[in-house]
Length: 179
Image 1 (tube, rainbow, N blue to C red):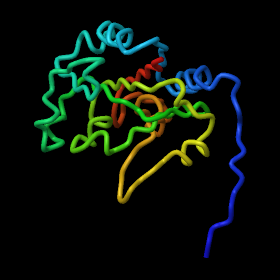
Image 2 (image 1 turned 90 degrees about the vertical axis):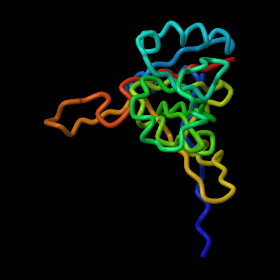
Image 3 (image 1 turned 60 degrees about the vertical axis):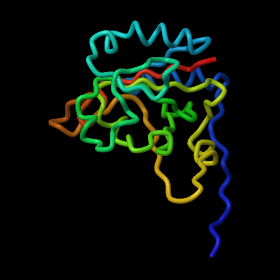
Image 4 (image 1 turned 120 degrees about the horizontal axis):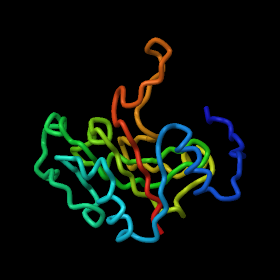
Protein backbone atom coordinates (compact mmCIF):
# COMPACT_ATOMS: atom_id res chain seq x y z
CA UNK A 1 0.00 0.00 0.00
CA UNK A 2 1.41 3.37 -1.00
CA UNK A 3 1.94 6.03 1.62
CA UNK A 4 -0.15 9.17 1.30
CA UNK A 5 1.41 12.27 -0.18
CA UNK A 6 2.15 14.80 2.54
CA UNK A 7 2.51 18.47 1.83
CA UNK A 8 6.06 19.68 2.35
CA UNK A 9 5.05 23.16 3.33
CA UNK A 10 7.15 24.55 6.02
CA UNK A 11 8.71 27.62 7.31
CA UNK A 12 10.49 29.84 4.79
CA UNK A 13 13.33 32.10 5.83
CA UNK A 14 14.23 35.37 4.18
CA UNK A 15 17.93 34.53 4.53
CA UNK A 16 18.45 30.77 5.03
CA UNK A 17 22.23 31.02 5.70
CA UNK A 18 21.63 33.67 8.39
CA UNK A 19 18.88 31.53 9.94
CA UNK A 20 21.19 28.51 9.81
CA UNK A 21 23.87 30.46 11.71
CA UNK A 22 21.32 31.52 14.33
CA UNK A 23 19.95 27.98 14.72
CA UNK A 24 23.45 26.53 14.98
CA UNK A 25 24.39 29.09 17.65
CA UNK A 26 21.27 28.18 19.63
CA UNK A 27 22.50 24.58 19.92
CA UNK A 28 26.07 25.50 20.90
CA UNK A 29 27.79 25.62 17.51
CA UNK A 30 29.32 28.49 15.58
CA UNK A 31 28.94 29.51 11.95
CA UNK A 32 31.37 31.63 9.97
CA UNK A 33 30.94 32.97 6.44
CA UNK A 34 33.95 32.90 4.14
CA UNK A 35 34.28 34.02 0.53
CA UNK A 36 36.40 31.05 -0.59
CA UNK A 37 38.41 28.04 0.55
CA UNK A 38 41.58 30.12 0.88
CA UNK A 39 39.84 32.29 3.48
CA UNK A 40 38.57 29.16 5.25
CA UNK A 41 42.13 27.77 5.27
CA UNK A 42 43.33 30.95 7.02
CA UNK A 43 40.41 30.95 9.49
CA UNK A 44 40.81 27.24 10.33
CA UNK A 45 44.55 27.64 10.90
CA UNK A 46 43.76 30.39 13.44
CA UNK A 47 41.17 28.40 15.41
CA UNK A 48 42.43 27.81 18.97
CA UNK A 49 41.31 24.17 18.77
CA UNK A 50 43.49 23.70 15.68
CA UNK A 51 46.44 25.66 17.09
CA UNK A 52 46.40 23.47 20.22
CA UNK A 53 45.72 20.19 18.39
CA UNK A 54 48.31 17.49 18.11
CA UNK A 55 46.19 15.40 15.69
CA UNK A 56 44.13 16.94 12.91
CA UNK A 57 42.21 14.70 10.51
CA UNK A 58 41.10 16.45 7.34
CA UNK A 59 39.05 15.17 4.42
CA UNK A 60 39.37 18.61 2.78
CA UNK A 61 43.09 19.07 2.02
CA UNK A 62 42.41 22.50 0.45
CA UNK A 63 41.36 23.70 3.92
CA UNK A 64 43.92 21.85 6.06
CA UNK A 65 46.34 19.08 5.18
CA UNK A 66 45.91 17.38 8.55
CA UNK A 67 48.54 15.14 10.06
CA UNK A 68 46.51 11.95 10.45
CA UNK A 69 47.04 9.59 7.47
CA UNK A 70 43.32 8.86 6.98
CA UNK A 71 43.87 6.81 3.82
CA UNK A 72 45.85 4.32 5.92
CA UNK A 73 43.27 3.99 8.71
CA UNK A 74 41.49 0.63 8.65
CA UNK A 75 40.38 0.39 12.28
CA UNK A 76 38.17 3.21 13.65
CA UNK A 77 39.85 2.77 17.04
CA UNK A 78 42.91 4.42 15.48
CA UNK A 79 40.90 7.67 15.40
CA UNK A 80 40.38 7.72 19.19
CA UNK A 81 42.90 10.49 19.80
CA UNK A 82 41.93 12.86 16.95
CA UNK A 83 41.67 16.40 18.28
CA UNK A 84 40.09 18.09 15.24
CA UNK A 85 38.25 16.63 12.25
CA UNK A 86 37.61 18.74 9.14
CA UNK A 87 34.82 17.43 6.91
CA UNK A 88 32.62 18.57 4.05
CA UNK A 89 28.87 18.62 4.52
CA UNK A 90 26.58 18.12 1.53
CA UNK A 91 24.02 20.66 2.72
CA UNK A 92 22.71 22.42 5.81
CA UNK A 93 19.25 23.04 7.30
CA UNK A 94 18.25 26.55 8.34
CA UNK A 95 15.46 25.57 10.75
CA UNK A 96 17.67 23.49 13.09
CA UNK A 97 21.32 24.24 12.31
CA UNK A 98 22.02 20.70 11.09
CA UNK A 99 24.55 19.67 8.43
CA UNK A 100 24.16 16.48 6.40
CA UNK A 101 27.39 14.46 6.27
CA UNK A 102 27.07 11.43 4.00
CA UNK A 103 28.78 8.25 5.12
CA UNK A 104 30.11 7.64 1.60
CA UNK A 105 32.30 10.74 1.96
CA UNK A 106 33.81 9.30 5.13
CA UNK A 107 34.65 5.87 3.72
CA UNK A 108 36.10 3.60 6.42
CA UNK A 109 36.32 6.62 8.74
CA UNK A 110 32.63 6.81 9.66
CA UNK A 111 33.47 7.17 13.36
CA UNK A 112 35.38 10.41 12.72
CA UNK A 113 32.60 12.99 13.31
CA UNK A 114 31.65 11.26 16.55
CA UNK A 115 35.04 10.47 18.03
CA UNK A 116 36.86 13.75 17.41
CA UNK A 117 37.16 16.35 20.15
CA UNK A 118 36.39 19.29 17.82
CA UNK A 119 34.57 19.30 14.51
CA UNK A 120 34.91 21.69 11.56
CA UNK A 121 32.38 21.37 8.74
CA UNK A 122 32.41 23.14 5.38
CA UNK A 123 29.22 23.78 3.38
CA UNK A 124 28.31 26.13 0.55
CA UNK A 125 25.64 28.72 1.49
CA UNK A 126 23.69 27.91 -1.68
CA UNK A 127 23.28 24.46 -0.13
CA UNK A 128 21.35 25.70 2.91
CA UNK A 129 17.75 24.50 2.71
CA UNK A 130 14.90 25.94 4.74
CA UNK A 131 13.50 22.83 6.47
CA UNK A 132 14.08 19.17 7.20
CA UNK A 133 11.33 18.39 4.65
CA UNK A 134 13.57 19.90 1.97
CA UNK A 135 16.60 18.17 3.43
CA UNK A 136 14.96 14.73 3.30
CA UNK A 137 13.95 15.37 -0.32
CA UNK A 138 17.65 15.86 -1.16
CA UNK A 139 18.83 12.59 0.37
CA UNK A 140 19.88 9.98 -2.17
CA UNK A 141 21.07 6.46 -1.51
CA UNK A 142 21.90 4.13 -4.39
CA UNK A 143 21.59 1.18 -2.03
CA UNK A 144 22.33 0.62 1.61
CA UNK A 145 23.87 3.77 2.98
CA UNK A 146 24.68 5.85 5.98
CA UNK A 147 24.69 9.53 6.73
CA UNK A 148 24.13 11.81 9.67
CA UNK A 149 22.66 15.21 10.43
CA UNK A 150 25.01 16.99 12.83
CA UNK A 151 23.70 20.01 14.70
CA UNK A 152 26.25 21.63 16.97
CA UNK A 153 28.53 19.88 19.44
CA UNK A 154 27.48 16.81 21.37
CA UNK A 155 25.36 17.61 24.38
CA UNK A 156 23.10 16.07 26.98
CA UNK A 157 21.03 17.48 29.80
CA UNK A 158 19.92 14.29 31.47
CA UNK A 159 22.76 14.16 33.98
CA UNK A 160 21.37 15.77 37.12
CA UNK A 161 19.49 18.23 34.89
CA UNK A 162 22.70 20.01 33.91
CA UNK A 163 23.69 20.70 30.31
CA UNK A 164 26.95 18.95 29.45
CA UNK A 165 28.67 19.87 26.17
CA UNK A 166 30.83 17.19 24.58
CA UNK A 167 29.28 14.38 26.58
CA UNK A 168 29.20 11.83 23.77
CA UNK A 169 31.20 13.37 20.96
CA UNK A 170 32.67 16.61 19.68
CA UNK A 171 33.02 19.37 22.28
CA UNK A 172 32.79 22.10 19.65
CA UNK A 173 31.47 22.50 16.14
CA UNK A 174 32.32 25.28 13.70
CA UNK A 175 30.59 25.37 10.31
CA UNK A 176 32.08 27.45 7.53
CA UNK A 177 29.67 28.60 4.82
CA UNK A 178 31.95 29.08 1.81
CA UNK A 179 31.18 31.15 -1.24
